[in-house]
Image 1 (cartoon, rainbow, N blue to C red):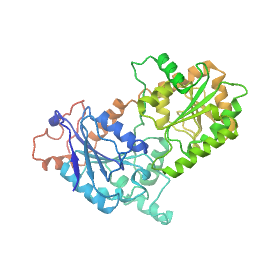
Image 2: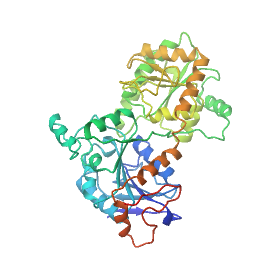
Image 3: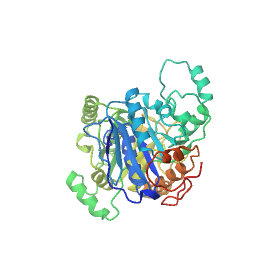
Image 4: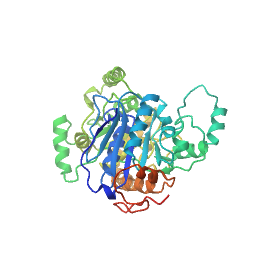
Length: 443
């Protein structure tokens, strides 16, 4: 039986009811879980929100801010999804919103069956956090996938999720193009917000001094910061090599790697091995005393460390796009950033305007050149810092929540009308305005 934990929620008669389906609730090990928890908090100011998942873990976060939890036992298999569908039917939310990424669901395709198990007319929304790289089953010929996808019968990655959703959300242009080309669906684009933001009331100079003293970073040394999960695909090997190249010109330079190693994508043994590898590379390059790896930090402490830095460096081996949560976080801390170019390059990341863009990935020399440009040009740093902050200015969580509520209200397939008829309680009729000025239109 599902376990439902509830906190008292006020004004339920004027608030939409949203169920966010997430593969797990482990924000320290999964970026999608972290995103979903932030989204639930932002939506909770104007809506009644459930977090819905299957199974549990020791590191699972507790919902906050009045968000309720729907949690069924088991795993992400057909039985678990069937149990979750039953729990969602009983809760009867206005919208069921799935946060899709294969890794978040343990690479199980079963969540793709959820649309087939919900009541007809359910307002279903899917956000594709990852797309256009995975398929299940993997051995099906591409021509057969194209045949069923063109007819929107099935999708090789999300099964029935994307084809049967009332709305599909993406976070970047590449995913939008893939969805249009594959399914003929025009998705909505909603950016990713920062998962770590500075305390607006803090004295930045005081924080900088205190953190540098505690971490034994020289007060005037140029400090580079990497932020995010420390995984092999993040280009940290090349960043350590680049750091060694910079030492003769900038003898005080330091690097702080802010983020945990273990995640759903990198097991504890793999994470430990990678951390040891990076430490060994730093020793071999003669910069072991210049590299600090913090491991996972609470968001407030991670923010303080970023505040103490001078330059952010995101040398991802696949390149960086504007949808990156790490990029949003460094923008929130008003840091100039060095990024590696994606293929194709993200048009919003313009060299010397919103970032210093390194044209090649996996290239320590090119990365060092990009960092050197910022270390030697204060005007460039100021221009990039302002440009990135301006680019990200409309990506706060309040605006992201507003965009979601408007999109939920635009779903017109009648699911909420039938959902309301199943509830033994008074609610405003379809089409009534909800708090915050968002309407669920009549069906």
